[in-house]
Image (tube, rainbow, N blue to C red; front, top):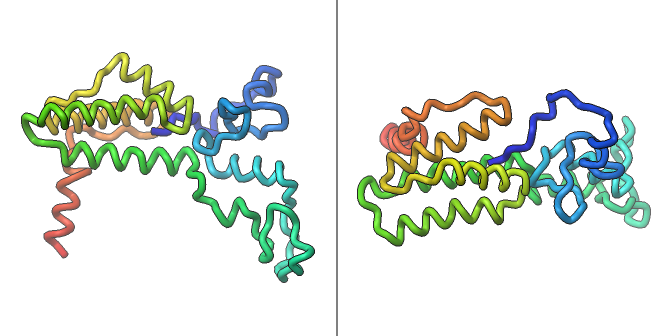
Length: 203
């Protein structure tokens, strides 16, 4: 689901870029609607550096591995010298982790969708879930991109094969934005359902 631009893209030092990132914000960090760094919109490394900067964390010097007394522990760090950011690296999820798990959920839902003639409530619930993500997804730029995509390509919820393919094509749209390889949508069923069944049989 993530549509955060790759950090390998060219950077500029224009004042506009600085304003977009926010005052004192490192490159690669996206600022959320509340004016604070948005981890769900940014990669983990950028978010970690930004958070360490805000809490005043300094790089650990070589040879300084011993634990400090509790009354000497710096704010934002633990007694072992690791920062709170490092202790809770996956909370909240960064854009990559969040996107990966969101797509896993959506593709799995698609692979277990009724083969033919899903009930009205099943179709409506699936459609509502997808539309809801375009509003409540934590990464605002990602949600906006999904809104645009839904306006151009409404979800196909008539049966499993159509939903699976729609999800695959939507995922590929994000992959193109991120400069990643696209997946062969003709093999989407094998990727999300049949492979798992084969593993079960082999074991």
